[in-house]
Image 1 (cartoon, helix red, strand yellow):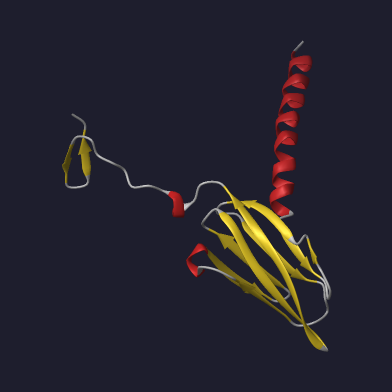
Image 2 (image 1 turned 90 degrees about the vertical axis):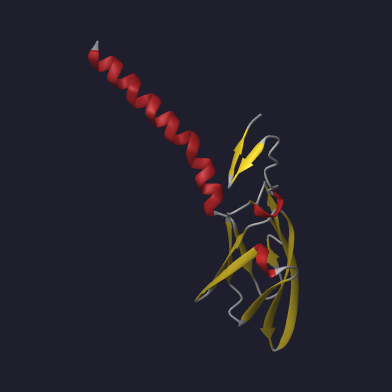
Length: 137
């Protein structure tokens, strides 16, 4: 009897773990692969505060340039990779310059979904404010 219950517990635990594996794999696969003539994918969708990794498979020197406001993301350069974290929802277009005898310009975008710092509205106090504390009426 105890063995059967233990089997059920192990099975339930495995099912719970497997339920979270696809989301972990999706987060790990948030990357744009840079080839000499194309980006795969050209448009990547991620959540706010997640990162996109740009992996250079072109065999050439590349430069990734994000267009728009710089405060909405930050970049970390590692040999062969660039990791970009995004703090604001919306479409973040970028240009990749690939040195291939001539400079090839590849365009893409990271679409960030969710609520971020850019959309956080200040709290409105309908009562009395004492220093930073709102006292309800």
